[in-house]
Length: 337
Image (cartoon, rainbow, N blue to C red; front, side, top):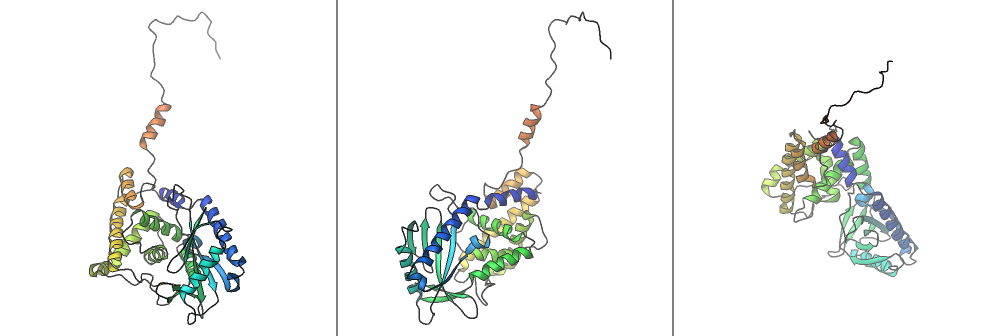
């Protein structure tokens, strides 16, 4: 079986680097301070906070962008004054856009665009999504869709708290396991990008063993339980309900089609089978091929036996060599201890 140490090395490798984390921190702090300092926008700004995988510490190494592998994605939320009965989502998005545009040069914003529920910005060091929220009683928030003018319940702060609780429940192995699941998702993409991000975290929690410590067995267990749990849903071509732990009755797979879910299910089934073969393979070179079908070429190879042979050859005593002529005896008298 593949040593757990190789999974630990892999997890360390796919973690965001120190440089990435530093870029994330400097980028989001500058943008948040800029909004607080804007005289117009700050009048309606109640508070701002971080969310997403960056805040939950479940982010993985950023993808290569324009030759730079250190461009992180950060989610920022700004809570503003207003009511969903008197305010339109498009209005909140537009007010935020104008505030960022006014400070574009001061904040070193290279690009600025409106999404359905957020403003996407790009600076020299990071990409960020900034979403305006309205407060919801008794807790949580409303996030608006500017295209449909609809409001949805959400609670990014509780998502972060939930993720930390799961990490405690699974003895510190939850967030690392999520990173493995997310990396496998990136390496084996489907036409539809869903499920992703927080939905993948909830999927991992729903199907993860609380006692297993070997990460290869952990991910195999997640894949296996996921496949068995949703086998009938897959046969029917449907998408299951995935309960949002922060919003009662909320569905994290809302809007995901049966075809999109089916494509992801089929990938996970293949991962389950490859993980099973890898775990039962004594030849670690062969096992690595199976793991790399799931995790890609960054998954570490076993220490090469060829390297061991080379190292051994370097210290091997050379064969004895004999001269063509007999050696003459020494004229010196022998010494005795």
